[in-house]
Length: 324
Length: 299
Image (cartoon, rainbow over all chains, first blue to last red):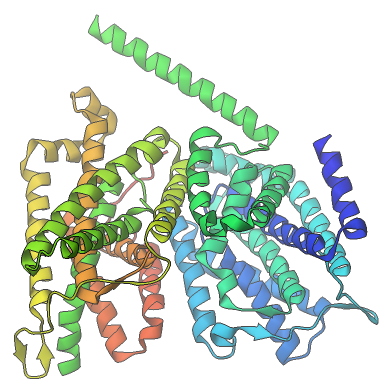
């Protein structure tokens, strides 16, 4: 029911909405793309990435620089942006994906900061001012300039990314990720080489972020390093945690909440990040599965809880036996 | 050579801050295998609480700089230590067995503290009282201020005290037992929860000490000061070997000196990139650090 209403609202928005609402809707679409991409890394493969905004930045900067400095068109630029993000995913992922999962979180954070500081310090990326005057994309002679046109383009991106995510979860890759996430040693024993599959998750996640970055660049027509901070990475993480890791409707719901709530509470802009922080802790304490958890995740959690309970019962029984 | 020696002096001062904060990371990690993301922000809270004490004392017309500093240190260290315990009890304890959830909770705690300071104090830089001048011994063009000497000496004393506490007392033995095997420690009658809380308390106390002296040394503080410094202190802990107390001290001073030398000879704009690159390289090449032992991932 809720899903049908959401789809109807998404279709009705560009027809009946005013430019402001459509713009908010487009922002939601960008966070849906980013959330779906990070969901592959964190939700599917279970790798905590705290520098995901770096891939978003690489996609956006590749698009902006190619279109502004080399006058490339949007459509040939898009795959280049995705490829650049994928390549950076391989470069940072290959040496680091063998390490302990919490170290990986720190390394990705460091990588995210390095990319942002480099974009701020280098002259060819435009320094702190970034790149501006990025042209709008064209289809034939039609320029996608109006909020409606950009919304529709964003929606097309989201539909593709959504279809990709849906199929990935049900592919051989998806099953391998699930196995690694739940028990890496057992997965390895079953013939799954974890590093390869982790790298695939990392690279595919980067491709999604790269594409989202390309769309972000042509939508805003100007980008600068302040859009790609650690806070941005945390915001994207918040999208998937709020919605429910591994759950596609959850990511969409999470993106909508993360974008619309601060817009609706403009007066409380000052407390936004503070509320984010409290929200993250409370979510982990009260509802770690998110608002709209994936069904597989729920079943897994029940199984794990039951096995833990039985282990605990066993330990208690052993202890009782020893004391006797 | 002159530049190198001067940067060595500055590096040892910054290194003392890194080392004090790295100890908090390393102790908590050693015991519950958590990267306490909020630890850098605990340090920032320490600096702000110290500033509040200085402000209060100025209102009360306490003119004695040494007395004011002592009071600021005591109040800030005590209050920040309790905050560390509160953080553990509220945000971490219920999640001790959920690997991903506890990390995310730690990120949430970090944001909460940062933007709590933002809301309570100020979004911009705040100025610390200027109690210690630049005066001090000098050799040729190399300047050392008495404040630098004080920071270095007092942190050495604190770190030695911590080392003795962990290695020579019963509580310290309990901490070390916990680091090896929590369940076995519990079976030996150790109150695991209280020992973990004590670890958070000690780490936060050291961080607050570093926070107050950071304010006195750089004369300004901001609500985000703990983010970058915390990351670098974590780098220092990893560099020395995480979980290892002398390692954190060594890593802190080493990182401080290396970074100061890099800033002295190259552009300081790339200083942070340099620190992050060190972090990534160590984690890839030698994840157990200089003095650490191999850590097996706990499932």
